[in-house]
Length: 377
Figure (cartoon, one colour):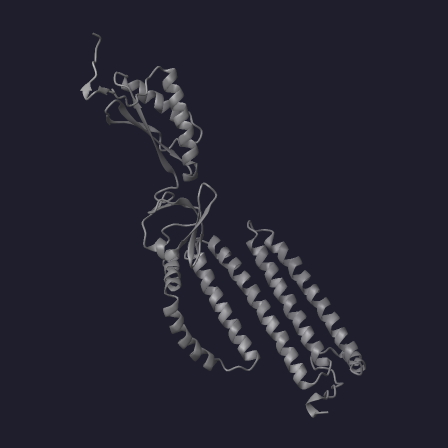
């Protein structure tokens, strides 16, 4: 048997940090490595649960005074991290106490440390997202962190966290990162040429988030005619949800280089509806204006400020043309409110005896190349 395959003798002396009351127990259990490892694991797990409960018990009393649940979510993450560190430390100490061969103990501890790094990376990304959300609510001190910039900061923190975790993993396995960085530079150049469209979408995503021509919840109309609500502004693409509940995924490079009409932009989110109405010549214009004005004022979804207004737009071929201009609170209601206004206007015009003209044509029939007689013989 090789010397590396034998288990080194276990030191029966207790660690220096161990309380004196437990030193005799450690010395006794050192003769039974499996029992000692089991005791360490159970004690560590119990301590982790106790610490998590202690942090939550006192922390939730403090966070109960706040309005949002963001600080409570962050507190639960912190309590989970504390329990995670204690639990992994107990497992590492238990593995060390087993007296495994040096190679086996080293690989096992490195695997355990790698799992801990991956767990901390996942938790750190969650904590970063919650922390940004908390900073976003403190507008007077952190005005730069708001709804439109949170995705940019979230991505930046994710890259930093992943890079730090990758570096920690390389250090755990004693891998020199210098060669990897040099190789990454060469590979990055090759990938840059091969993925030009992807990089274009990536940089366009940064510019869109920084410039903020639209935000989540806005109704936008693209130059190609698509209209929908912005549901996600990602780094590679922007997602729109149409009124047909169909999701449109548009690359950010396209969004950055096309004309985008933001119906939710401007001074307010309100949207103006234009209802075009034509009435027959001979109709008293004041009656039409009063009728349209009353219909808009009585509609529950039409805003009082700005007030609805009616404008006479001109003389058509067979009608006098009017526009009813009114505002609604949300662009999403445009289709439904327009439908109701058109329906009410049509019924009101009929009830008032006001004629809605329509194009009419006189048809002349020819027989044997000669025009037909237009009168009686």
